[in-house]
Length: 140
Image (cartoon, rainbow, N blue to C red; front, side, top):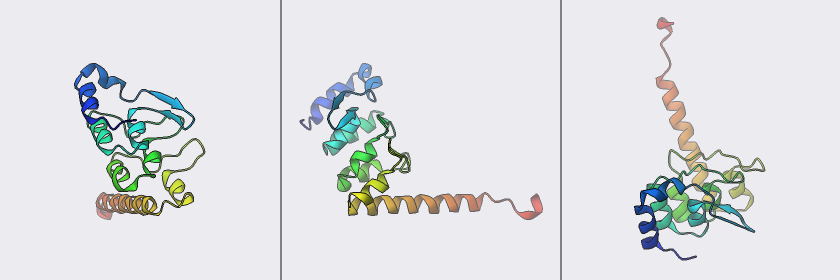
């Protein structure tokens, strides 16, 4: 499939097409895909950016798989693009495995590093936020 950025811009320019962003569009031997999953699985960074900008749900799952599971195969561009505060990096697929577990099992070392760093960053942020929310003893 072509990385037709211009064609995609044309499609997304019509507001009538935007509600269809998360609908499954293809089912083949590799699974079922919506437009963002397809762009990610094919390594089309610009198309993925356009779709996300138009409101494609980065956490939308089909058959237990989100775009993140496809992005671990392309860590340089797509995984970096998808790993933002809105992406559920702990989501589990239909087999109960996270993208981090898949990256480890398939020895996708760069993806594993990116996901582990993001998980650690989120844990630190969460710990830091909860530390600021603790009420002083004298106010109980």
